[in-house]
Structures are given as C-alpha cells and as structure tokens.
Length: 115
Image 1 (cartoon, rainbow, N blue to C red):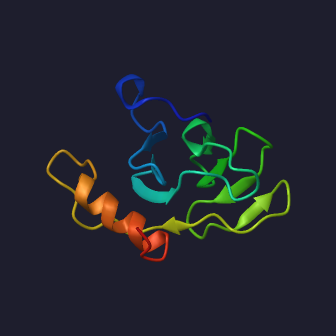
Image 2: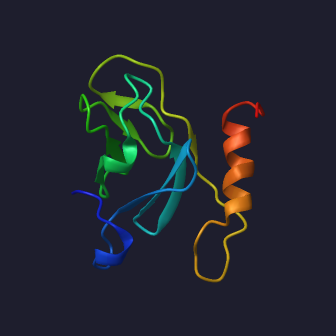
C-alpha cells in the first residue's frame, strides 16, 4: 500500500505529510503518527515512503528499510538506528490537522530541544 497526497486519497488510504523540516505526519488506520522525516539509514525522505496500513509500517524509498510506526523499530532492510516516532498527538485542531506550533514543539522534543 502506498501513501497518497491528502487531496487524492480514498477513505482508509494512508497519507504522509511533511509538517516541519524534521517531521512527517503519517495518517493510517485511524491513527496519526508523527515521525522523523529522514530515514536513519541514509537520510531517505520518508514523505515519499510506502506505508503498509495493515502492519503500521513505513518503508524508505531510498534503500527500502522498513520501520514499525508504533515503536520506530527497524523490521527489515539495512542495519541502522530506530526511526524516531511520537505516537500520541494531543492538540489537534477541529480540521484534524496538526497545528504548526505543536509540530514545532514536537520537533524540538525529537531533536533533544536544540534549536
């Protein structure tokens, strides 16, 4: 299953959106997962990744390393660190979108607070 842009998706299809330079929002299976935008293996851009909605996994388009979207654990592909994942997304606005300020705060948290 491949992620498609939000404007062209059917119901239930996964969507991957870049929300900050460092983060993507993966919408799949009724869940919203905020994760690092770059694959920890070689920096592949995960906004172009393939999402398996049944297994809640994302595959990097560069070298096909696959990560679990609930834990960040690498499940197949090249050896590398786990993908940084935030599973709980509080503070969504009425449209269901992640607010810019919340995304920025979460990005700071993922990068260890460095600006």
